[in-house]
Amino acid sequence: MTNEIRALEKKVGANNADIQKVKEKVKALNDQVQANKKALLQLL
Image (cartoon, rainbow, N blue to C red; front, side, top):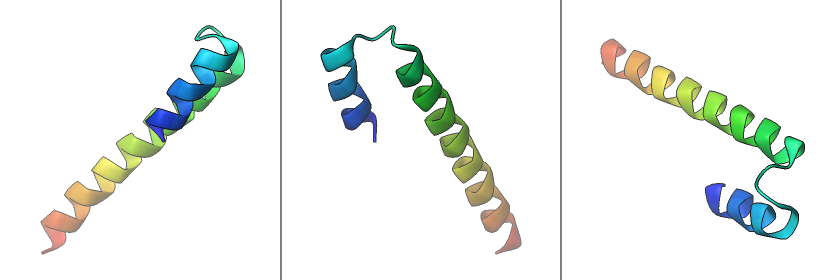
């Protein structure tokens, strides 16, 4: 996913507001995945 974001940044510029929103959403999803992994490990 990050490679696709970098490619878009090169095309339209890193300061594009839409790209910033996507980056924030991806970070939030990654944080959620990490939290889920920790929760799963605690269940095992």
